[in-house]
Figure (cartoon, rainbow, N blue to C red):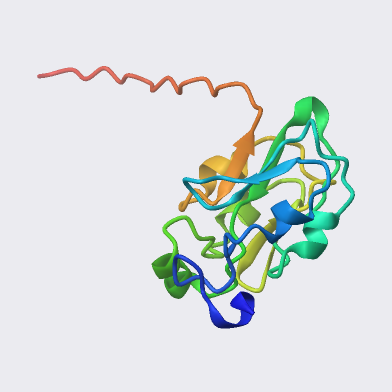
Length: 160
């Protein structure tokens, strides 16, 4: 009912409602609602990939993916299919389908469909170029080593 009538805490009609249907569906205590964000947190060590949370989500926001090497993850943390302006008004970290991530991906792992970027985990090589290219910060990375700071070249100038 809430899915059909309520937008959620923001004006995004695509985001999580925060009512915990997924949490209640999990028989393995692997999912809990974060009290601060109102979003589900999955405890990977308890998850058995049964798919109950996927079926329970009224907005189809949860997706089962195979664990990657060293449990690394890169994904688009947005499901808003609105165009750039309306999506950005609803959420400051909305995907605006700007194509920057698509253009920087050398492996064809990113597609843009319905105004939303999607990363195909089977093609992604974890180069992380899309993460740094995303202007809104909607592409997230987990379990990676910290990035090395960029060393800017110092140019010597001569005064005459």
